[in-house]
Length: 542
Image 1 (tube, helix red, strand yellow):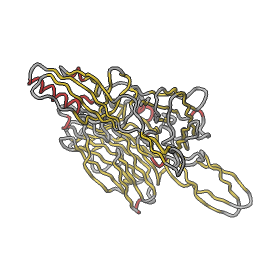
Image 2 (image 1 turned 90 degrees about the horizontal axis):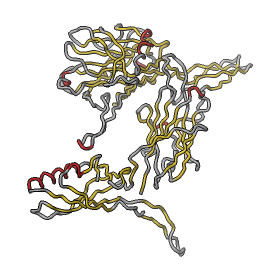
Image 3 (image 1 turned 120 degrees about the vertical axis):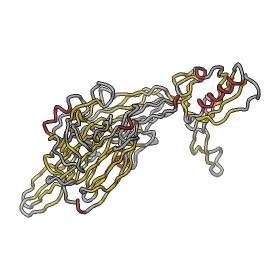
Image 4 (image 1 turned 180 degrees about the vertical axis):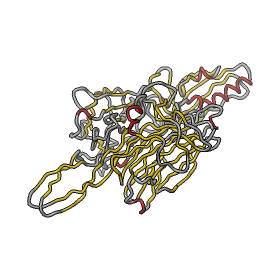
């Protein structure tokens, strides 16, 4: 028996699996309804109960000391909850079970037999391989030959148009996406009635003015490729930005690897030189928007953490994302800094030039906010860590909302209601002569302006105008729907608000045989900017 990727027989000398029971087909539990004098019963529903797997084993050692060591090691192997269980006669499938009991053994013997019991709260077994399906070439649908004997809930991924131009445009916008099967079960996200442009009829003469909500992308720069920064750096001013506190703006900035690899799409914008200073010092870059934004959403992704070296805890540094108006006043911003030894730093949420919240934050190598992803190793009891990295700052009237790697906070100040952002400054710094943070850089930054366009209506002559509509999805967005968990994420952030209230989460699934699942999106999206769709699933068996 293989548990969490390794056979017990290979881990414990003298251990041998004798037999296994409980893996066979599981009988369902039926709930029925009796109706008056009617013969028999009517099926209400059926469900599959928890599965119990019993493993018979033998443990043979040379002496009592070796027996105790082997038995202790066996307990360590069995102690992990929700372990992956694979059996040698079926290596392509696994159960998920937790060790719950063990039979008594004869005392004073070095050769014993017994039974180990695993409880599988999820009674089904799954294919080890996860399959990824691309759409068929002749239409907007997936054709899936499903070989499991129990229903499987797939995961859908939508990658919206990848815009690397760095220019302001509306390419890749989309109002909705949906997935459906032959029985008209539907998962819908966004608004299918949302248009790229809204037609407005204006009557001349008698004046009537009203507002139309719309959006405009003012900044959309990605720094994930080796040449990304060179393509846009002429649009930025270096070391002359508006920052929080009196850090020294000095040094140089450029494309740097964010992992130990030279592969494309792993770069980020980071300091290539920090200059000198006796406090926090390092380079800044400032981007001036083509027009001021009173209401907006700024989204960005960063990596910020120490490394795992012996002196990693001594590394210090800071990251600032500051939004200011045309006069140099700070409207909003984030300041994350590590000023002393250890793994902890602090973050500040700034509104209207003042710190509104300051708290401690983990900046260790695999911190869940901006750290490095970690691969699971169940043998070593190491769990998987997939860090967020994405953050946002959103202003709507007097409300400023922060989502700092999953840390959410909103503040309301009437003083900022009419204030508008004109410049964005990013600072990447180190502290005095302390070693710099191993990882401190920016993957991308995007700001979308939300505003109401004033439309004037007059009488006598009817004139038709077209205005942009504020859309749910934009270029470079990644949307993931996990139907097994009934969840939706946009750019790795939970977005339950995008789903329709009547979504058929329970009824849209793969069943044995050929399955066809279609997908759709706003019909006004041009083919050159159409989103790309993927489907992933595991086979499920009784």
